[in-house]
Length: 120
Image (cartoon, rainbow, N blue to C red; front, side, top):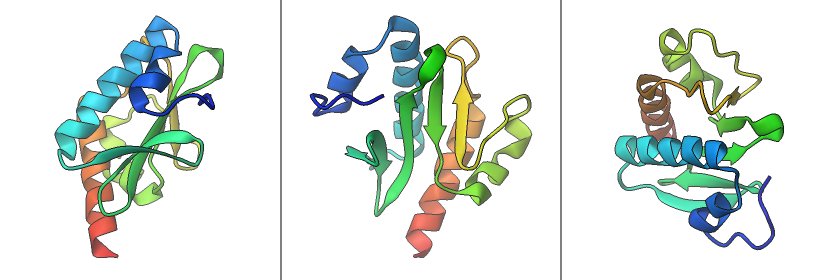
């Protein structure tokens, strides 16, 4: 759901309805807390967070949902116990803004991605 005019994550977020915007702002803060050196970019048509490579991505999804792109099934497995009730499809976790992914799960997935990217 990225727009051609979005040049930054702030621009992208400004285009979203309030519930999705709030949910993605929360994700952004949690991702930066887990990977303080990461940079925000646009790749694959979505906002992504990079540190020595792409860690995770976020986006608004259809039907008012949001999505976290983890790009790694093993990173999702690292947070499996904190993801009860969420059903990843491939490497994507869709969620409703009113039912966000737990902070602990975000932290574990981002840390797992940091380790994977550093190991390359």
